[in-house]
Each structure stands twice: as structure tokens, then as C-alpha cells.
Length: 314
Image 1 (cartoon, helix red, strand yellow):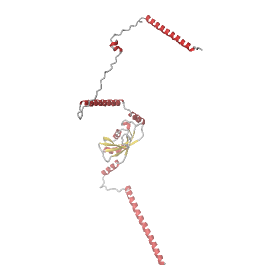
Image 2 (tube, helix red, strand yellow):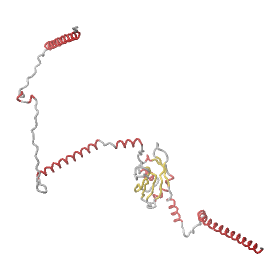
Image 3 (cartoon, helix red, strand yellow):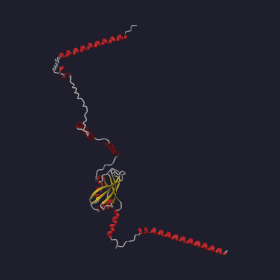
Image 4 (cartoon, helix red, strand yellow):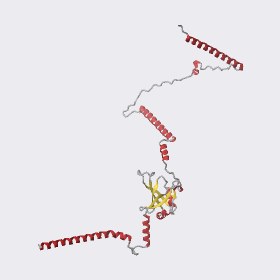
């Protein structure tokens, strides 16, 4: 009995010692992993100084300049007095070309030469060209969205000067360097409406082209028809058709132009007999008398019609 108790106690003590050893090994492994994670952070916060024999002052300055040029810089500007809200152009060096400066966030509705005007204010190096590299429009159109430009200088120092001084100058105004035509919904609607209709000049050109083509087709048809009647075909036959009879034209003449009806007779000159004033008065009085007589006849006829209507034989 006592032997069995001693064996149980030994077994329990061995189990406890094994658990303690496992816990201690687990904690050691956790400390090692945590130490590995903290080593790069500590090194970055407290970097070890490099020996002077390996890095000189010129290489260090060049390294710092390269690191600064890789950062994204901005240039402040506005459109004009009416559209005076602050805007920004983003500048960055082009790693593929040391002469090139990348300028982003350029509105597509503004002319690109204002970017060249901005840079010429604080960069003394002349600009060789300004090229549109890409656009933010989904369809790839360079008339919408935001453009990304590549400004190429004649010397790489122009890129460094632009990146160093761009945030310390401005804001510039676009209207001082070029004419600004801001987009408008009304202006775009009018432009699209007018684009649906052709101008008078375009219509005239279209009509002239159509008539010219029509005349050429008619001439070609006549030429082929004439050739068909005069030249034999592949088998040696000549097509012969019944020609239409020519009918004489009907000439219409006036009565005076026909000789048999007095066309050759000379017209008599009309002479006004009522040349004097008393003849004119007599003619006027005669005409009034005729009208009065006609009036009396009409009056009698109307009276007879009235009596006939009132007549009642019963």
C-alpha cells in the first residue's frame, strides 16, 4: 500500500515538472519572436551611423536630393477672379526620363500652355515640350476628365528646381497666361443643337457634289448605250432597237400673229373723240342718263314681282 502511494506521488511530481518545462520553453519562444519583430523598429528609430570611409558628403547630398524628388509636390493656382477657389497641380519626377517632370490633375477644359507659363515663373531652365500622357476619362478622350502631362526640360536641373520651389510660390491665375473658356451646360447644349444642322455652305457643297455625280452618271449611261448600239458584243452581235418616231413640235401663235386672220394688218390708232371739256361733260351726262333709265327699269320689275307675290285668286 505504501509502495503504491510513493509511486503515485513520484508520477504526479514528474507531471508537474514536465508542465513547468513546457511553459518555460513556450515563453522563451514567444520572447524570441517578439524580439525579432521589434529589432527593425528599433533600428529605424535609432539608425547606426555609417562609417565616414563608406559615405562621403557628396553622395549623401545626392541621395537626399533623389529621395526628395521622388516625393509628390503640389503647385497652387486658381482660374480667375470669378472662379477663385484654390486648386492644385501635383508634380513628381519621371524616373524613366531625368529631363521630364510629371504634372497631374490638369483640367481637360483648360489649354495646356498655362502649365508651361506657371513653371516659367520660378524655373529658369527652358522647356522643350509639353506632352499629354494619359487622361482619367473612361473612354480615353482628352477632352474630359483630368490630364497627366509630361513637361520636358532642356536640362535635368529644371526638374529639381521645379520640385524644390513649387510649394513656395503661387497661387498663380490661369487667366494671366491664356484665355479661359469655362464649360457651361447652356453653351454645350447650344453647341450640340447647332451641330445637328448643316450650314448653308455645307448644303450648297452637298447639292453641287450630288448634281455633279448625277451628271457624270447620266453621261456614262449615254456613253454605254451609244457604245452598245455601235460596237458588237462578245459573240459579234449588235443590238438594234426600234427608235421612237420624232413628233413635230406644236407651235402656239396668238390671233394677231396668224397672217390669215389679220396678223399682217396694221392696227388703227385710237383717237379720243372727247378731247375737249364739253365733250367729256356730254359723255358723262349721257352715261348718267343710261344708268338712271336702267335704275327705273329695275324698280318697275321689282314692283311687279312684289305684286305677283301678293296676288291671291281666292
